[in-house]
Image (cartoon, rainbow, N blue to C red; front, side, top):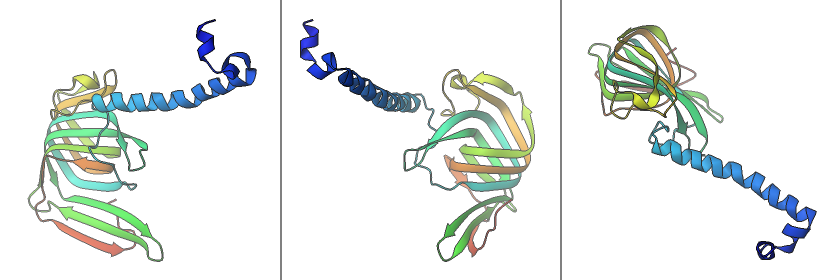
Amino acid sequence: MEDSQHLPDNAVNSPDGRVRWRRFAVLTLPAVAVTAGLGIALAQGALAASFAVSGQQFKVSANSLEGEGFAQYGSVDVNARNELIPVAVTAIKEAKLHSLCQSVVTTLPLIGDISLNLTAGQKDPVEASNLFVDATQLSGDAVFSNIEIGRDASTLDKGPTEAVGMQDLFAQQADSVTISNLHQTAWATNAGTFKLSGLNMSISKGKKECF
């Protein structure tokens, strides 16, 4: 009885008061849970890109990709509105891409579709180290060397050092990977170094995508 004296009368004696307390808990607990979950995700490296991603995905294609030290696992990107976006992270220690194309289409009022296209690696391949791609779609013809499928994402050790996910989540890794006719749709790309041989960038009206 002594403890109840410290609570507002309506919280102890009034049915309406009890309803308000319960409603407060129902509204508060999910927000607390989301905040705690984000804190855990950040601590465990579950959030992928180190920056807020834009509201537009972009497309990437290449005649071929050759990579050493491959890892892939599920993760989450965050946009400027703090919305969570599920992605599959592909991480490669050293990568070479032949005939790279990257495109993004923006729709503007009164103007319509505007396409930004980037190409490189037509002669000498594009080279990247510690490459991370946060993708929602990937296709092509792939060959893996010494692949491990179903490994715990927190124990990955063949890709870049930072390429680890949350404990108990599905992941795969391989000593090397080769992908022909690569098509990929992504939210973000990070790389330690990114060497673009024969870089060409253009902007044009209309929808002009890599695939």
